[in-house]
Length: 278
Image (cartoon, rainbow, N blue to C red; front, side):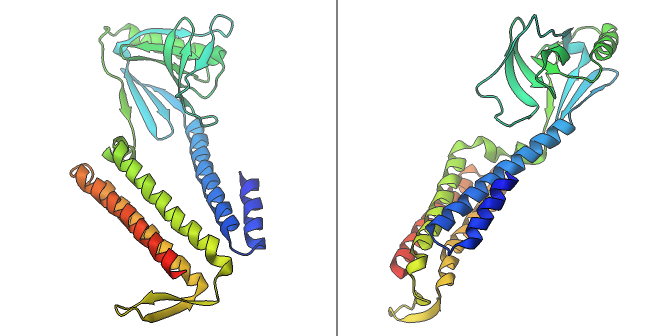
């Protein structure tokens, strides 16, 4: 990813700005987003741990924690690669090395993988009253022995598995598909404005009119580079709307949708403006 970013940066700096440079910029942004996700995946792997308490097992995977009551565990077993096979679910995390994944283990059933390895020989399957988990402690046999010893003195009692996530991940906005679709549409509209300016940029004169007064007279002339201020206004509008929208979503879902709808209208107006100006 770093090599790809370096190559894109070289091509970007070696050529005049045009639609090709715009596409390179979009590609660089997408690669950067994927790189950030992979960095978090690495962080999650390095921070995966299993903490046994007097009456609970805490599984830490990155910024997420699962708390399993020992009294709700009905079975603990170490797997063998020769007697079991693992198949990842299609909807599982696509991230390389990401420890939280959904899978199916033959003879066991659907399992939430909270392990740092895909090797069945290193996994321990924990069957609780609300789900089956696969973990990979450093010393598998000692972990199984200690876990069984601690839950042996407890009476079995079904209990929910507590999943603790960061506050940002619990925002109601992430469950509103319509609001997310409106936000995506606004981004696509803003990219369209940037793309049009980039397409026309090589053929623009050094100076061009960028604003007209109420009488239709030119009242502002700027350099051609200042044409990018128009889509930049659209970007600022989207950022302001999404920040406010996420903040009020829990109380006023409709207000968030209206804000993002307005952001789409702003992009349409700006697109018409750049078409007329340049």
